[in-house]
Length: 270
Image 1 (tube, helix red, strand yellow):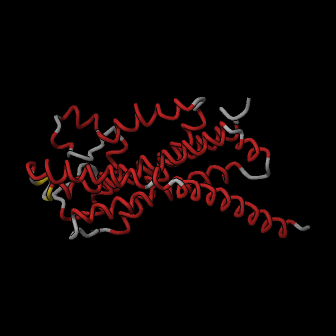
Image 2 (cartoon, rainbow, N blue to C red):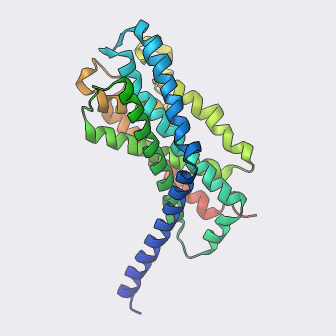
Image 3 (cartoon, rainbow, N blue to C red):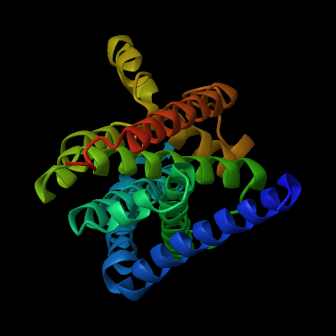
């Protein structure tokens, strides 16, 4: 077989492998939809009721919009972050724990296909959960419109990619099921709640404003908020271009790190 014949065949094989991994991931989280899709909808409904309606009515406006409109993008982003991260970390660690990943590693499947396949599964779950939460938000904000659809879609997609990769790295290093919960509990949750979801960093003193700018989730939430509310916001906490740059740089760094760990077999080979 000539080299030109082999290249299309290799690409086709990699494509089939990628689609198989993605399909397995999608079937997995859709099969247990009551555990993967329903809880975020219920949780975010409570957030909208408690913070948006009850507390928000007393807070008033933030940056020129009502409080419930201000927190809506952050709540959507919160659900995307937790869902995309949880999907990959739980799925890949389960495959590692059950020794299924070893079959992939000894197969002709390239490492990047394995990484992209699991990441795509996390992204799809994150985006679906995000759409569910948007649907919930329409019950409380029926007149809301997206000011910059392209920016909104780009930010939410990049965020899902970033935290899917983060979940992959967590799963590689995890040695037991308790390790899977350490990062979401002690790192991800505090960063999310301190990432400007429920407040503007303008309300903090200058020292804590600078500390908040070291939180990457602040950039994602604010870029997504700008994508939805746009010029209706009197001001944003961070520059949108800077936010996109931070997200892209972190995606590249995490992708290269995850691919390196996968190739070295860190935490995968005895």
